[in-house]
Image 1 (cartoon, rainbow, N blue to C red):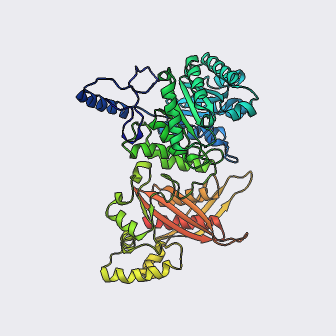
Image 2: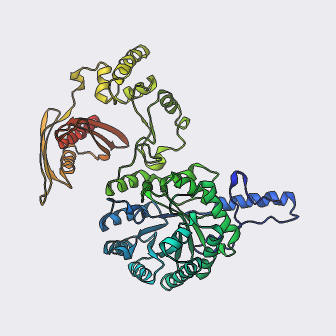
Image 3: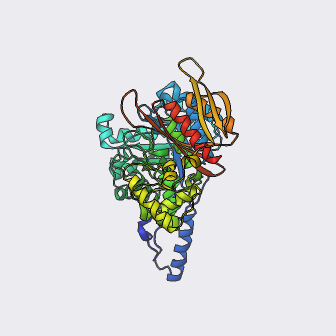
Length: 548
């Protein structure tokens, strides 16, 4: 007889009748007396079916992700991110909690006018007034969803609502029925489902589906569950809710114990067909499940039986947009989108990557919008990495010359945290005359401040000739960069701009690292100065000079 579970613990759903917008799944029962040959063919067909199933990606960066203190977004910023989420083919965008503030209400209204492909979702409590306001905010949406719900754990029922299970069940059903008066697509969330007793949770899920819920969200609100526990909870629902094929089951996991991504994937492997996620994993406390981690795990691991429509090459760009607008830096070692996600500093790793990228990388950086892996020079780097950078600078060495340069490199690397291009030129014995840049900054003046338009005037020396330009911008650095670009007449994209403090105090020396792109090639620039604007422009010019 065919097994109910495939190898690896993957939950096997049956093939129900499909209706638009629904991917109902339920436990596939073994057929007694089925011939072995037929059983094998049936399993093969079933595997093909589940491999073809779509996983809906529900992004809540603009709602749950924005609940981080100090990371609030205004309407214009939300619109910009919503457009980027739509461009990467996110299925559902939860834009806010409209009754919570006029700003959230306005953001949903304006996003609904602009975003036409993704479903626009508004959050509400299981309160009629909340649902009324959510429906009003979604008035202009082409595809609309109301996301309503209530806490179902005993912690919430007893201490938050001072109620009992039966009353909460009635309120859940009433909210779904009321929301269905406004929209056909209603999602119900059982808040703190991770700590809700499974038998009661199954009763709630069955009741809200019967009331008209098209999606049922099973949140691990406090990030309490272990992956095996959360997966078993989803599996329990598929085995004990008779009408579960009438709705999509969704995951919504938090990262309090660092297991949001693992729990989400456990839910998917046990039948969930929607994941609720945020870019960079932003969110309250330790954050939400990171979209990029879940999507790339599914893309990388062919044994996860679903697919998404997400255009993964947008990840790096959208990650940086979220980081910038929310003023929340991405940790360098963050999976998929961190600055070090595709960086190698160990000599053994560097040699392996240079020979064959897949030796140490399971993801092609291009797939997530990163141009290439980076080979960082540190005291642990080997000759292969050093020679790689010499070749990048157009310096060719034989074995004896490389050995000599490597000895010098190791002595310098033990003293410095980072080795830059200027250091490499010196190690290679390139004289200062040869090192002299064809372009350098001679003069910089900026005007900025409250109630004034930031302006910058730069004077560059390019091949011995003075060139001057003035430009305005969003700030003094942006204005100066625009002025520089107007003088070099090249299409330059700023990929990374990093400012680091070297000393302390108001007279601190700031070190600026710049990464730019031109015609598919990456160039780096460095500078340090007590004037951070000057350091920024010098680093920018330093990077551009390498193009020239």
